[in-house]
View 1: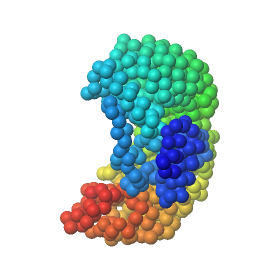
View 2: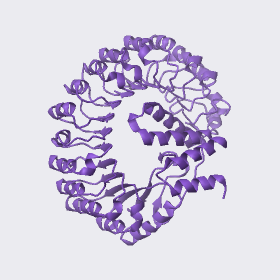
View 3: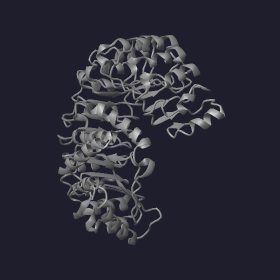
View 4: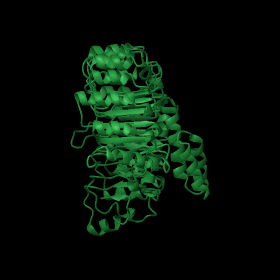
Length: 537
């Protein structure tokens, strides 16, 4: 057995222990596979620390960069198992990973019917557990009868995370919840996702579950009523959660029941994507002391109009990572966030697609409290000349690693090419790794400024629909300062010959993905570019 095989066997035998993984990372580093080593280390640290880690934002960005690079240049195993059990392999091997290895195993019951298929699945799981450290099973389109059969199999005791998708509602959903809560093999679960409706009776059954180690919970939330939430909140396992994901909407009164319930002293992540929380319930949440450890709050695609942002800014919570993307923020929201007493602790702020007026964007751009901020997304808001100037001149933003200023294609711009030229000339972000100016009318002169050595730290640059010229793009792709780019977006620029140097693999040798769609590139150049798999036409 080789050293690598021995190290992999140790990881499989001890799937919960980071030590064998980190020893393997050292071996990878010593054997010329530094990207894999760094990816594994970053994912282990992210899993251990979560959003409370001081370097959470930077690590998340680096994880994405390495995932993109490995997806193109890294090894692509294709493990196979019997019984309909599958794991992402090939080009998707690096897409769904956790602590350096496949995140989950998957079974689709759409074409595998009856309880016999569950016994075959149990045998396949035993083989998978002997080959990979993944201990998360995702069940899709299984019946309640199939679920009951599978839950009787002793191999289920090896799972630490479980996702169940049923085509069931009402009484059947409650039956499934009761079966899960009664299963003695699931006592070691640390994560549970339920992709089926959870009426009050199902919530009451789940509350009786024996999951003393459960860390994250993701139920189908759009039918969880106030009574169901109160039942869940009364469960001891629920009060010990670190992450709660309620991502498909909440009925009126449910969020209020959560906010007024027992304290969730360990909860660091709350995701209420797609929820239109009534303003009085949001006010109660903002004042609630039930979430003392909350560090990451996601309210994307919800409703944060009216006084909701003001309540959050003045409330009891101090998030480090805040996502208010596409939330209909009203005038004054940007100023309120910039003035929040906890603004100095923010490491990532996503306010994309809110149509914030220029005055609010300017308040955010000029905020001198953002010294800890590493990721800032102001895409889809009114970015005027004064806001661009404030962004470039604000010393508090000097530590940014990612800056997103995307504009919607076809919308009028308050800033023109000259304003972007002055912005890029003044911008001084020495650690910036991700810059997205897609949709901004840069023009050729502003784009050429990106070849300056001060942008040498960039790993990802997106300039889609930026009205670039062929000469400017040729200068970009051959610039020594941009030699280490991993992703480059150049879609929709009406280019012809500018991207031709990319046909040479020595140009941007670390490139993992380059988008060139919706350009007018001649056939002869297109054929040469297609020989490079990372170039996407």
